Length: 78
Image (cartoon, rainbow, N blue to C red; front, side):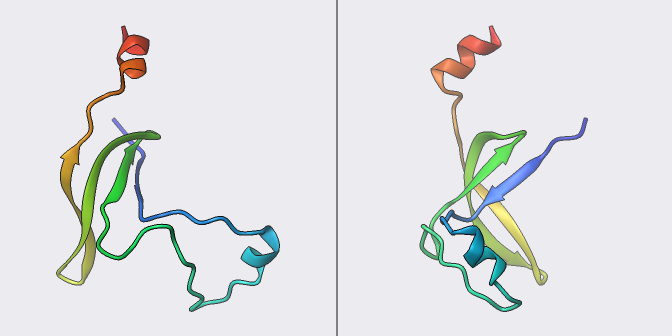
């Protein structure tokens, strides 16, 4: 089974004009601070929160919290 896993470090709003001006090495400010938990999505569902780590020169995410399904999600699955 293939699952789409996405890790969200943060968000920002930018005009298309400003996105097109980005170059290699550009810095984009996000709405979270360094060290804040990152959000983990599986198939577009927010399922967990974790922290970014570096292990053997690779980035990885340690899961710190598994989120319980919202009441609407439970009703939709029934």
